[in-house]
Amino acid sequence: MNTIYTLTDNIITSLGFTTESNFNSLKNGISGIAQTFDPKITQTPMFTSLIDSEMLKNEFTQYGDRVDYTRLEQMMILSISKALKQTNIDTKSGNTIFLFSSTKGNIDLLENRRQNFSRERINLWALADEVCRFFKNPVKPVIISNACISGVSAIITAAHLLQENKYSNAIVCGGDIISEFTPSGFQSFKAISSNPCKPFDASRDGITLGEGVGTLILTSNKNLVTEKNPIIFRGGSNSNDANHISGPSRTGDGLFFAIQNALIEAGKENKNIDYISAHGTATQYNDEMEAKAIALAGLEDVPVNSLKAYWGHTLGAAGIIECIAGIHSIKEKCIIQSLGYHDLGVSVPLHIITKFENKEIKNFIKTASGFGGCNAAVYFSELNAD
Image (cartoon, rainbow, N blue to C red; front, side):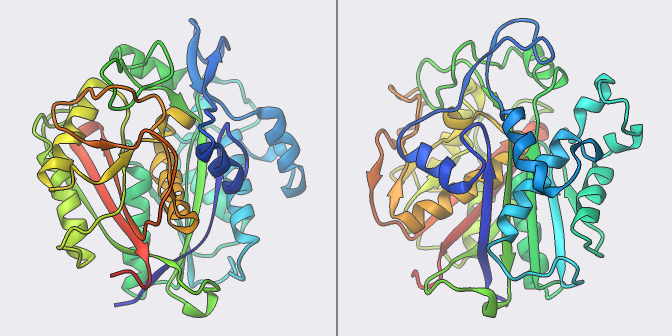
């Protein structure tokens, strides 16, 4: 089976427009979450993590006319372009496929504030086609919209396509923006925190939403790899606990199955895991379920964090940007503090990372869960790791 290498990446959030700026903020415990009073987003003040639109405008100038692309399309084109600059991949080749993950896509078009776009652009397939057209890619793109596991599922799908020799390169891009529609749904569940979120903490009271786009480029072409000990995809799995349309399993068995199957695919049954990047939304039910799943997998002693208190829950981007952060944790030999955490608030003891630490790690698991009972887990490691 083909080895799947991680080639390059990019993160765009409130913390910056490069992976470097974002990861440096994580290492220094800097959050991009702030209170917003924007009436286009919320009628009451709300903590969120928003990308600077003026900075986006300036950054995008070199890539084309802003009026031809929606705000999310601009962010995706910019993120992909920044990642591609570090490679020799030809996006015009039929050996390269684009995969997109998003939960809402061009949702702001529903609010009729952008009259210069056709209503068709609200469709997720239209978003994917528009971005692919910019890069002149001839392959029909794949778009995955499966609640909050969309990003992790897109990575798994991309890796499996490469393993099956369907393509040589996969450009995986995930993103979502915050508009009036997005918080309204979570507010109806009373799931949004009145403060910056606190994953796994005893005083947690809900999520913090955030905007973000992430791009991860995978390849099976060893000739494109320049690192001596690159990070590779070793295994991934999806599952569904079939518990409830919006409530996760109370036992954690669905996410446990995803973790277990990802490790089996990776040939990692000895469970020598260095780090877990959790979904950690800071809702009462998600964090409790996730803790139980980690314990069922026998990984409760493994260092674990959630990055949601840095850039919020970025929905379709979350799985991708958090995998990228895990990859750079391996490269830079460190683990990131789980910001917002003070006292354990779940029934299962976990090894929550409470401070930044320089530490050699060679592998990690990324978990994700979402509405409809969906769950996903993916495992990355150094090429030469046991």
